[in-house]
Amino acid sequence: MTTHEIDVAIIGTGSAGMTAYRGAREHTESVLLIEGTEYGTTCARVGCMPSKLLIAAADAAHHVMAAPGFGVHGGTVQVDGAAVMQRVRSERDRFVGFVTEAVEAWPQAHRRLGRVRFLDAHTLEFDDGERIRARRIVIATGSSPIVPEDWRVGLGDRLITNDDVFAWQTLPASVAVVGAGVIALELGQALHRLGVRVRVFDRGGRFGGLSDPEVIAAARRVLAEDFPLTTGAVIDRAARAGDGVRIDFQHQGAAHSERYDYLLAALGRAPNLAHLNLGVSGLPLDPRGVPISDPSTGQIGDSHVFIAGDASARRMLLHEAADEGRIAGDNAGRYPDVREHRRRTGLAVAFTDPQIAVAGASHAELLASGRSFEVAELDFSDQGRSRVMRRNRGLLRVYGEHHSDLFLGAEMIAPDGEHLAHLLAWAVHARMTVQQMLDAPFYHPVVEEGVRTALRHLQRRLRMGPPPVPHCMDCGPGA
Image 1 (spheres, rainbow, N blue to C red):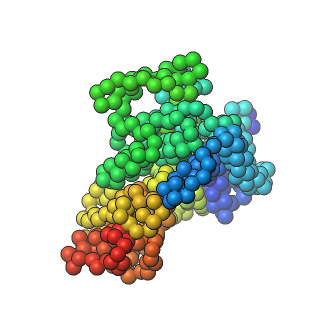
Image 2: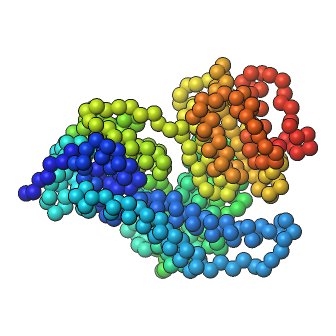
Image 3: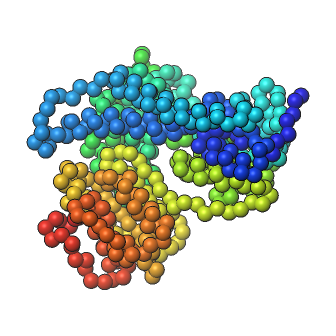
């Protein structure tokens, strides 16, 4: 049996694995990247980029349909589903190509295709029997959509996940979306705007990555105005019905039955760990079977094994995966000289319309931390620039710490939320106080003025100062 000795083995070549490779190579050239399927990150192949391509097409259709509200009239909207999906696939393949070219430019001796499993704490075995003896290991195996087994067996090709959507040759007539996370809401709204009959089944609880109950309520209300969103539905049965799916569900005490071409399971993602045989590794595992690691080092327990990206089951976002890969790769390369790295301030965005975002500490994180904080909000219905654009829907909630006046974070559903969230995350990262933020310039008229209004309310609640004086007396309370 062939066994190769190496310094660092990295399992997975997604965003985390690629940055782990670069980090490890700063310390050793004895590195092997192992990929079980094909090169190309989740983001480029089935995640961030193709979903934004679909959303961009949906936004284009929506802008045409919304034009009469400005007194601008044109022809009817005609969506060419085949052309929409052709552009999605073509541009997606271009993004994937950049990733695969980067990996394939690395030395051939540094990469190997094949699935591996642990034989012991240091030994990995490929399916063909070849073995690797690694002094240090980085687990960066990513994640996969969660799919109930009875749906998988009973629905066949009528069951899809986001991994399947971007292989479509054209748009279907109808899709039932089960789940209310970021993927469910983004795809559900986009498909609806492209003329697909959609219903999103929101089973309650967390919504779009939010945790603030007031923002969740606002997000449900706002998005339900745009597409069929059924909250609190209980699905009794999902069954194959010819070339489609029949869904029987209970909602508000009444029974319903509807038929769709596809059921899109958007119930979240789980780490790809089952095939690794971690039980023989000696690594500490939580009840889910996920290795217990330190987010500031990536180290699992006090071992020579590190973990990064979606496999760690922390924040399943590209920039977090890249950061974790860099940390894990650096420490695997320099082991046993393991060093802590400062993590970036939290930032998450859902590209719905309006956009959902969390910047800095979430409401739930602040409650769990025990910190003494205050909350203020801004309803975008009267925000000046938002009304000008006819995009005045949403709610911003901002959090500040008592006594210190530190700005802690925000949750929102807001027009241009991706930009507001960056602004606020940077403020948290720089440890700015609410007063320092208010001392910064705000142009007029911009959506960001809504942030200033919310901060003024927050400052008053934190310091009990005089009422804020509006900058623009004629632009409404959200100017």
